[in-house]
Amino acid sequence: MSYKDLLVVLDASAPARGRIDLATALAERFAAHLVGLYPMQIPERPRELGYFDPAMLDPFFAEARERARNAADKVREQFESVAKLRGVSAEWRVVPEGAEADPALHARYLTILGQLDPDRGETEMIRPRPEQVTLTSGRPILVVPYAGRFENIGRRIVVGWSATREAARAVNDAMPLLTTADMVTVLTIDARERPGGHGELPGADISRHLARHGVKATIEQTVSADLSVGDALLSRAADLGADLLVMGAYGHSRMRELLLGGATRTLLRSMTLPVLMSH
Image 1 (cartoon, rainbow, N blue to C red):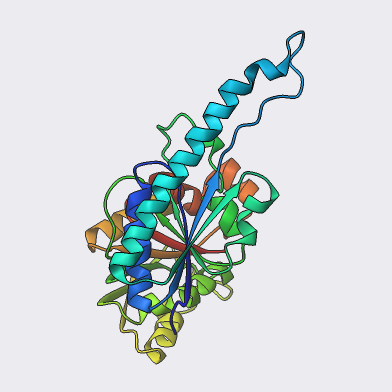
Image 2 (cartoon, rainbow, N blue to C red):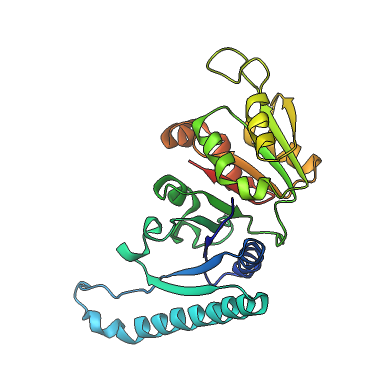
C-alpha cells in the first residue's frame, strides 16, 4: 500500500512553510503526486452601505485583493521551489472563497492541514477547518501543529485504539506509514473488555491484523485517571517519543463532543505532534 496522491492546504501564515516541507517529504517518500491548495480569501465590498455610496470603498477593497493575490504568489513560489528541489510531481491550485473552495471537492486523498492557532485573531475566519474536512471529505486528514517542525514523521507511531469504526478506518488509512515505521504502539485507554467493547485482550485483534501486514506492534493499556482521553494520548505519545498519532475522529457525534468534550476536540486544540485521523 502507498499514497499516490497527497493534498496540502496552505495559507500565508508562517507555519505553512512547515506543512510544505512535511508534505513534499511525504510525497518524495511515497513517489506521490502533491497538490498545493490555497483557499484565497478575497474581500468583496458590500452592495449597500446605508447613505453612502459603496463605490467609495472600491480603492480599499482593490488594495486588499491585490495583497491577497501577492500573498498567494509568495506561497506558490515556496511550494514550487521545495517540490522542485525534492523532485516531486506537484500542482498548484488557488480557489477563491465560495462553493469551489469546499474542501470536499479537493480532499479526495490524504489531506494535510494545519492546526488552527488560537492566538491568531482571524482563526475563526479560516477555512477549511480540520474538523470540517474530516467530517465531509470521507478521507483521512493529517493535522500538523502550528508550533514546531515535523518534516520527518511516521517513524515512531502511536495508534489510539478505541475499537470503533473510526479507529479501524484510521488504521487502514495510515497503513502506508505503519508498514514503514520503526516503532508502532497500539494504545488503549479505559478499555472495555466486555462484548461490544475491546474484547478479552484490548488491542490484540488489531495488532494481529497489523502483523499480517508486516507491522510489529506493541500493545499497551492505560487508564485516563484524572486526565481526559485526549490528554492521556498526548502524554503517552510524548513518553514514547512518538512523531505521529493515528486515531479515529468524532467517535461520538460532533454535537456531543462540543457539549461534553472528547478526544478529537482535545487533540485539535492541544496537539503536540502530527495527528492522522479518519471519520
